[in-house]
Length: 281
View 1 (cartoon, rainbow, N blue to C red):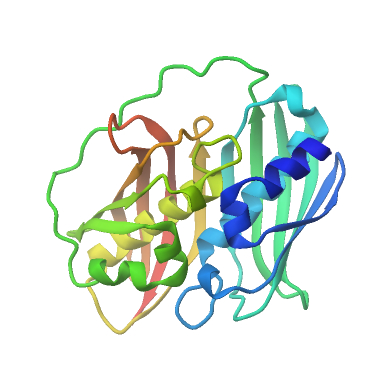
View 2 (tube, rainbow, N blue to C red; view 1 turned 90 degrees about the vertical axis):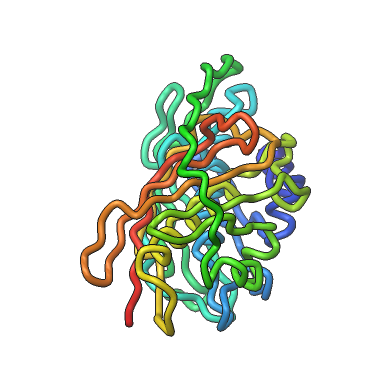
């Protein structure tokens, strides 16, 4: 339990968000997150990347407690997040529950809600323990078209408090594709020195959303992420990252985008996933 608590308290990313571990056992974990402007979208709404981060942190906390520190390193092999409603300028809590403990995989369910009990997000996760085994050679992500047109929205992306705090920036954001970067800054790191999975998920979510905007075009619209799926293929390295997003299907106000997150230099795969995005005119 002490190792799990140290992992949460000593990770610069969780400290930057203000995550607090309230309860922990081999079957349950509770996290608290006070409201902070730097975790929000415009209008004081909790950023979806923060809810995804709480889901990943809660699921890993339970897995680490259930399997013990010698089972590491750990990574979120699969995560499904459904966003149910918005938290506006208020604290939230995350409750993680162990569904099944395997030899190297733990299945965990996480509910994120406001302190008043309003459901914000629901997630299910499969967290993998590597028991010290070496990682396989990571796949190389194919480069995109190489264009660099951030469009009308791209330059304004860092003005969103949570995105700006991560250093996330748009290199390209037109024609249904996005290329979004994030530096290996101290505030994005895990206690191990790598990029925190929560920051990786925030980048993936942003790249998928921006690919949707790149498909719809800029306008005075309302938008949100109803759901996101992600697979982190191994413990993220401590390198600058780039995410390639591509809108593969549009159905009226619904956009389906695929995202690959890779190291910025060698383009080694870090995470992949899909983002379901909704833009209302």
